[in-house]
Image (cartoon, rainbow, N blue to C red):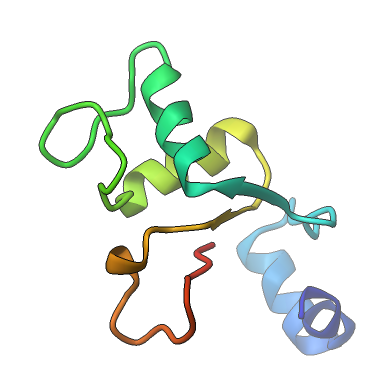
Length: 100
């Protein structure tokens, strides 16, 4: 997708105006299991707390801010995988979901 967007001169020009230092992400994207993400969030110093200001536990939804902290700290796009089925968004299909 990124290659297609960058191949269009007009759109690529907009990207350079909006984000002059943009570099397309390296592939393959890093993948992290939901359980590993929970452990990672709790292992930080200080821990990255859930929306109730407590340590994350298996079964918590990982809020967008926590997801962003993971990718910003690791400094790569990350696909979080293997979410518990009951956390799957109503609009997602299939047995699991992948979130960016």
